[in-house]
Every structure is written in structure tokens, then in C-alpha cells.
Length: 108
Image (cartoon, rainbow, N blue to C red; front, side):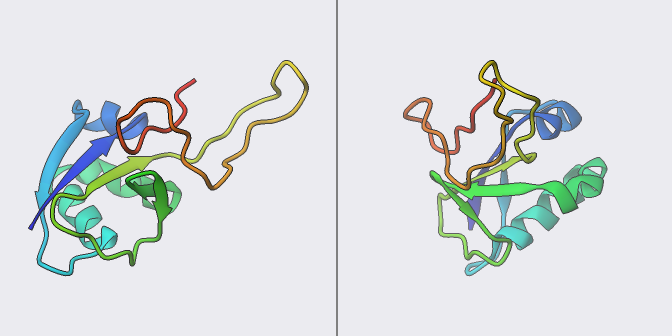
């Protein structure tokens, strides 16, 4: 089955692509898709311990089963310094809906 993949930040920079498609077997997981991506872009393998995955507007674990036409997103954890209010930025566990597109993390 074909799964669309959106790449953000370091993943986009390393591949030179914002999107790609991968084929995974029926019942394949996020981890299966990750392995297919790394087979095409081996430089990404070093980022695996830090990679966040999302399908739609939800973070998912590597064992999440993918469905046909799912859109899987890869991005690094949210980090940041202090904001103007003095609070530091952290990953909230929620996707931030910036547009109608799925898997749209906060970019700035």
C-alpha cells in the first residue's frame, strides 16, 4: 500500500524533498514506513531516536498501523528557548492546526 510522507525541518533538508511516497505491506506500521524511507535516504537513520511521527493531526507511536492513503509526518521534537513571557517552548503532545493540511506542526 502507498503512504504519503511529509518531511519537516532536518528531514526536508537532508532529502531535499518536502514529500515522498513509500510502499509498505498491508498492515504496515510507522516503523515499516520509516525503514522504507531510510532505505532511500540512509542519512536519516541517525535521527531515528529523536523523530516524532504523526498521522493526520495526532502524534503516533512507531507501532501504529498505517492505512492506505495515510499521510505520515516526520519532524524533530519541539525545543526552544524562552519566549517573550519567559516560558520555554516544549512539545505539548498535540498537533497544532495551522492550516487545513494534516500534520502541520508549528514552524516558528
